[in-house]
Image (cartoon, rainbow, N blue to C red):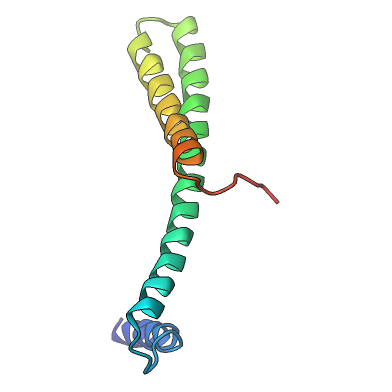
Length: 107
């Protein structure tokens, strides 16, 4: 196990050392940090879209189970999954409209 930790540590140092250098400009540091936050924003938008699709799909499956046996699957779970899915879609739309977020291109 100790060998794997050393390998991971060396890989992290190799990745971090390529971005660190002797330039002490605050503006350059802020510019590099902004690039990282753009990547993080893309990841969060993608995760929200995937999670909302999963919630809405699970709501459809749960609704079918509710129609088959209403006592086994309460309708409140279906409604909760739909609300959560719509909230995450709303988060993505708010990010797109108000914060000039990431374009949703799937290519």
